[in-house]
Image (cartoon, rainbow, N blue to C red; front, side):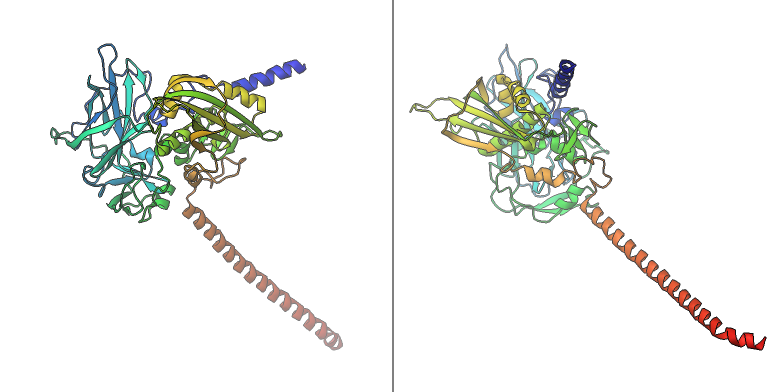
Length: 516
């Protein structure tokens, strides 16, 4: 009997934990699920297009892997829907429309207002892309720099993760990337072949909530947000979502830590919270409430806590990576490591807040410059939702292929082995709950209910609504109190009248008897 119970428990653990490699959708970028851009099993040559016929700008990009007769390479791109207000992204972001959040900013690739395309890279490693002047959006307390996402597809169907984006901040235009030695902008200008007859109108598209009216200051090339002096002006009608209402201040905070907003834009957890839902690690999607055999932690449906103390388990991988000097941009790598936290958490079905990630380069004794370097990726889990043995087993089964690691980190990973990091290392980048710069953005939108009440009717109400309800309750209580006080006063008056009458009756009784 005991062995049967143990077998059932093991089977239950396996079923709950079983995310087959390649199907762990907690690691997938939500834009694929949301069809902002097509995903597998599409071919690289699917949806070939030079961009919208009514595009405003044309950009030539170099430094791409070149196509060959045996291995073609395609460059695919997509941007937020066209700005509802006219502006010139080659000159300034002023007058650019601002959407409430990333979810509503992008059209789907099947929509008429899709702002992207797919072209074959030339044998010289160049490609030309065209887009309408894109709108931008609010991410937590920041305004995103208007941008275009880039993605490579090699061979027949090898779709790569999007790690690069064209950042358009007026006269200054650059490509954001983890690896600072990749794509380059060769030229950019107005699209001369623009077709005015083409219409990209989408009546069902969500409207913008603001427009940029002023940008003052130097824009950080390592940041994907506009400077603190950026001023936005609310449009009419005013935004109605809780996030938009709270963000509609005149001055937008600066990205002091040079945040790469891809971490939030590509986070399935953040997307669900923006939709005022939970992220369910078991169904790997958004949910109105969590399954009965799970619990809520930080807006995520995860394994329930056990009575055991928190297990601290650590696993490291040694990576041989091909990169220049520096090997990565810190801001972009922070974005990748945040995604790695989500990936590990999704593999274990725990909240990403219980995962810490670090990446460092091994110190080289050679004085010769080499493009191949040794890096160590370490994952630390601090949780009591799994035993130490279960956590170790799941971490060991985490995908370790070079293609997967390259996609996860945005680096060209050549080999992956298990290995302990050295005591001293170069360029260490750590990402945990105490220093993850994206955590406040999650805290700002996660439901404020307790872990056992995922269906609370007020959990997702705007702060203004909750304050209004509270004020209404106070007023109602005051009215009820006044009514009760008046009723009690009336009762006292009636009682006093009865007592007076009783006294009068008693004093009058002898006289009445005498008269009788």
